[in-house]
Length: 458
Image 1 (cartoon, rainbow, N blue to C red):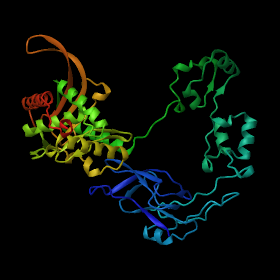
Image 2 (image 1 turned 120 degrees about the horizontal axis):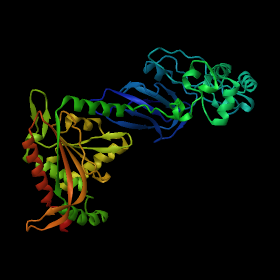
Image 3 (image 1 turned 135 degrees about the horizontal axis):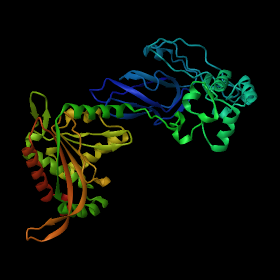
């Protein structure tokens, strides 16, 4: 029995999703767990897997279409099955799903009706066929004209059905040829010169004196490629620009003694490998120290809302996760109630959900976090200026650990490992003094890190 594929709802705040890529065509076999399509909300990207096996009988939306959640986007069933009831339920007209024949040439489907708002996809018409039933890249008339006029077929772009080269494509190439004098042709080959693009475009006669060195000619369209921004990348770009435009951002840089953190990491690592405790990373430790510092400085644990500041009773910690789709910032709700071990486990769960595309979009909203941590230390970055996730008041950039000269209490100087910290804050909400005091407290929390970890006491 045919089954409808529904656009999932990813979080209560999500009303529509954009289909970014179809991984199955109509007529393709589908197994349970096969990737059907990828889609994006306004905050994250996801993949939808098939819940039933069969054949993809219809796709009701195309790549780039914005689809309301819980709407039917495709139909899976058996070949030849009547799906008119599902299409009617989806509010589509037509949409007959025809299937490729088992052998020989494919038969185009009958014409189908479409409404302007309902571009239901069915199996496409078969491409033009040449000998052997295989698609032909160029029509016979176009091939004959190209041979007669010396046009390189490989350089042509077809505008016919399914990209087929037709006669008008060859004629266009002939018309766009540069009009060279015999001497210009000779000089081009001898001195490796090229005609100026502006004269070629204007169809002007080109003489030997017009030729120019190729390095003076701007790159042709084929020499580079324009990569369109994904919806998520556009949202990140808009968010960063809005953050800088709408807030008064200032960044303080400092560093903290990392010896206790490194010693703790050294003790944790073998126990984590043995499965005796969570694999607590340096980033987990810094995040834990940030939470403890925020509890002592609640004036930075909140949102600036224009005419008021909203301060939170608990720390809801956002942290940056680098994914193939772009930067995502999930939030650990009530992080101030967690132990270091609990925080480490929760952060890894959320990071994995971001990487797999299964994260709840509600956990990516900047409004749901009270403070954010962004760690570039693994890339060897010594200092950077993180950008606020407005309306949050602050964000901490965590830098790499470097050996730096430091004066000990006894007056001697030694090289010790220090971790760089970069605090960006909204100067509309707090001044430099309280921001600096927060950093001082954070450094003390890092330098005196002494969590009671059960695994270390066994």
